Image (cartoon, rainbow, N blue to C red; front, top):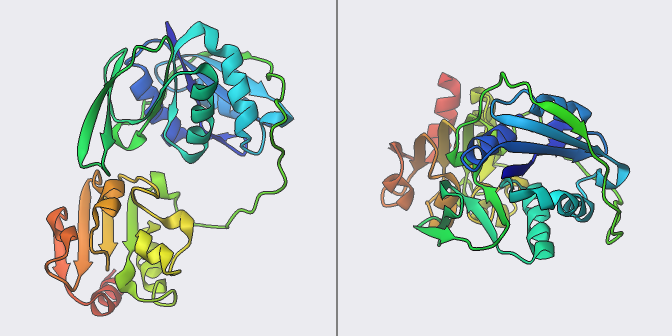
Length: 308
């Protein structure tokens, strides 16, 4: 049977990186049908049709699907679910919100953060903050899965899938949109950035965190933070990398003043190259770092910025 993949659509535009990586995973299960939905989704649907491996795109546009409303999106997926054995999505914040509801409405388990497809019924996923891998075999008639995109390569472009318009399901009316407050940011999006510079508790204060931002700007990087830095008020919540934050796998991850607790490592250990700067030579971060610099960050980072 075909696979229904919920595309990541933000403000009417397709989040190409997350969606294309999910397509790579979904192709291993069958023909991929992409669902692009939102208050405006036509442009996203057209972009999804060009992804290699997509056989068809369904576009649903309705006011009830706008503003990332999970209940109405889940209702739409349920109305389409009869034709699909697998219902999948990238492991993004929005998709996790939707797919948990889909699984509940179908009365099946959800396989979250899958990192590998063994066969149509069997998947691998990390547990215990990434310290162990679990193989899950589902006997549910329909499998609901979110894929951890950091472990899959993005599917290329060059496809020419057909695009079909579908109607939104009846709005369950369980919630309504009030307002969005979006933080302005000229830097790359954290989960898809090629370079990430993160600061930890060792940075010491919100004012000192400006050093991390300056280094990131020099490298054209996204800014991340450990949970300790976020909890201490040095950085905003949406910068948090780790088990309870965002999972990243950039080409280069620079960890500054981060000790390397397992909860943080769970969110960045798949990075291609890891660089650590910490004055504690016994810090656990050095066990996973490809390059480590034992130094006071307040000496090393300004020097690095000046040389860059």
